[in-house]
Amino acid sequence: MDGQLRPCGRRSRPAEEALVQEEADHDPFARRLVLLLIVGLGAIGSTQDPSTTNASSTSAADQAAAGAVAKAQADKSAADQVAADQVAADQAAADKVVADKKAAADKVVADKAAAVKAVADKAAAAKKAAADTAAADKAAAAKRIADANRLTTAQENAKRKAESYLDMSGFSRSGLIDQLKFEGFAMNDAARAIDSMKVNWNTQAERKAKSYLEMSGFSRSGLIDQLKFEGFTSAQAAHGADSMGL
Figure 1 (cartoon, rainbow, N blue to C red):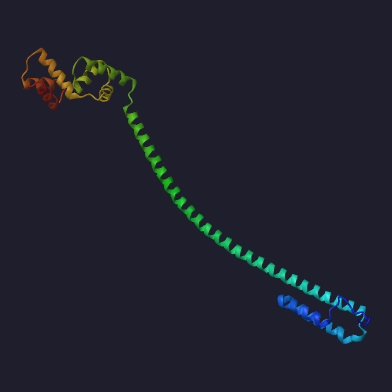
Figure 2 (figure 1 turned 180 degrees about the horizontal axis):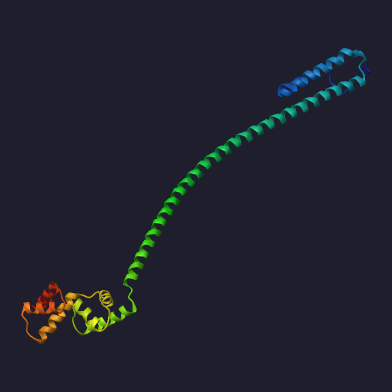
């Protein structure tokens, strides 16, 4: 030992440059830092005599290096933020394109469904209108029939009287009308009452023929003539005779 103290904790300039270069190899942004450090260190070295280096020059170099590092880090942070913002903007734009496309597709589906529903609603409305019209027509027809079949009080009484006569004996239509007229009913009321009863006149001819044969003997032609005299038609009279085996 020669008794002289050597500076501690301070690397030589080549050592510092080697360290910075090693860091630059791992981080592209550190390359800018390397350049700044080299320039700074070179400037310091050119203005000072190495033999007169003291604590103040060492402090200035450290401050310059620290400032260069801080600036490089700030630049890197700003660049990272810009890149992150761009990525976020690109992602938002892509998401909007996807959302707009989906919204357009959904609208097409909704419009198609609405069109189908409109057609179905129109068909249902037309069907209902047709059904309502048919029901109204049917109701009107039924009312007309009911009105046509409705009897007046006089006709109702004539009907009751005709039913009582038919319970006692067989009558032809004209014979029953004459009987009701004899009872004092008007011709129209008597005819209307009888026509509302749905009488089987062939059956009435059979009943009348039987009553005549129970009273006396008749030939076929004689019985037919007698039934015609009672107001039965030729066909009804012949049917009455046939029913008696004549």
